Image (cartoon, rainbow, N blue to C red):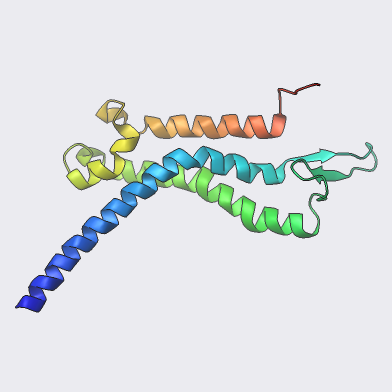
Length: 155
């Protein structure tokens, strides 16, 4: 009998622990995602130091690294691209689908509210998705900022 009660308590405690970890993960994702995406996209930003016929692209963050050869190719396609797809594409879609699936219980269920309230609390409950729209806009601005580099500083 004591073993059964102890197992029930540990299962309840474990569920609460997992819920708290999930909430922390969502908050960290919200806060860190723009920086993670920007830093990831910097891997793909290369500058041409060659001529129009002989292009020689080097990484803008480290001019010693030639783009799309050797280590740069491996790091870009092996780490940066999957990282961007995960944080910039998959996570916003996954989060939106998860909230849409639970949209009728966002305000009722304390567990669901605790997990997702950080994303929709500032908006009307039927506009639960709006923070994801804002996030996609941020990602677009980051892409434009990183690749177009519209503003240049001159000394």
